[in-house]
Length: 142
Image 1: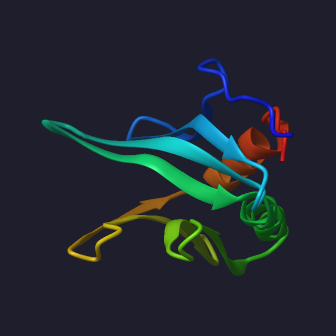
Image 2: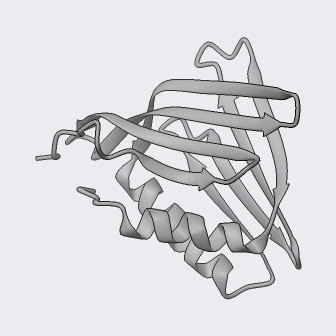
């Protein structure tokens, strides 16, 4: 039986001067084994701030484990890709590594397929390690 998500168990995958990505667990299910998060993404610029939110985004537990494994593989690579996909198999967060070039792609897709928001941000290889460590150390029930 899945543990009930608590408000104190927010998972912060990105947190720096430019951006913050938080996943706040709001629900869990046994069949299929999955968890839902409210996702908040904030992009900070010198004179602007943009906020994007996805409510109750469901992920299979195996997708979360696979994303953690992919991030771990990126730590020892110079090229690669990690993708966190929701239960509809749409990528929500992608991390791309090409030598010293690292980018995040955050995507919000409307379930009725009327629209899609896609945000790309360049960052540093150190951020992959931060994201991996945050996910690895998160108190999981999946």
